[in-house]
Amino acid sequence: MCPASGPPPTAGPASPTTRGTAARHRAGESYPVTRRRFATAGAFVLLTDGVVEGPSFPIEAGLSQVTRLVSANADGDPATVADVAMSVAEFTGHTDDSAVLVLRFDAAAPRAG
Image 1: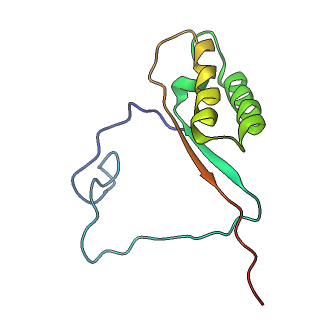
Image 2: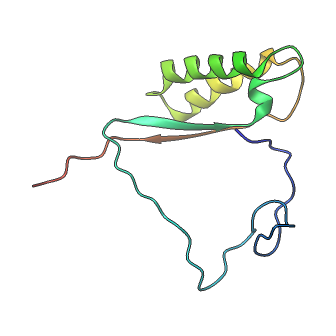
């Protein structure tokens, strides 16, 4: 979870006094890449705090409700998963920025040999 209204991205490499992340990749730089093979299909759901907390809705309740709804719909269409996650924002008691990103993935095929 991250706030959608964070600081603007910087135009260069990050430093201890720079807020945000670098807005571009620099030629010749290497960036870490991690690959994982998932044994089962599933979904990653990223969301902003405006979906799960507000003046009339504690974050623990919001995260619990999103977890329950996403778990029940994780094998569905990504748009459906996003819709059920976003529906929790109605309970927050405000009109703060709310965003949901869903990444669905299939199980990896078994390795030969």
